[in-house]
Length: 84
Image (cartoon, rainbow, N blue to C red; front, side):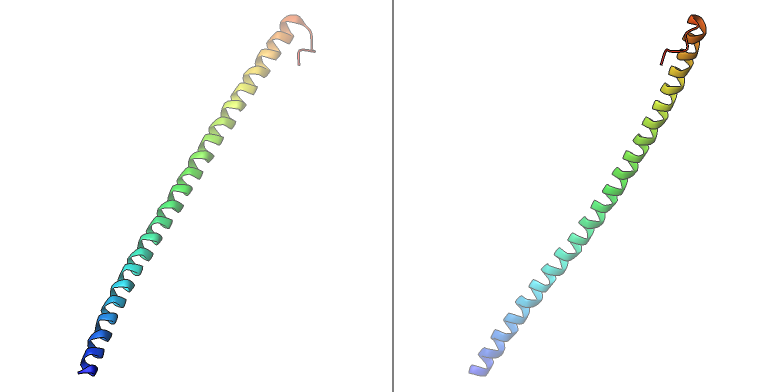
């Protein structure tokens, strides 16, 4: 009788252990998924920042070109080379 009770207790502990293992495995899978999603999000943000930086550099280059043209025209009109 004691052996049957002990066997039953062991079976219950094993069932609980399997349930805990399943929960931990599911949690692990969820964490891996979240890490993957975070990395993808950070990569996307990095691409956006890179794109915005490129757009800013292009804008500043256009502005510098325009300012150089304005300076050249003013220099031509006034005859003064010291407008910088």
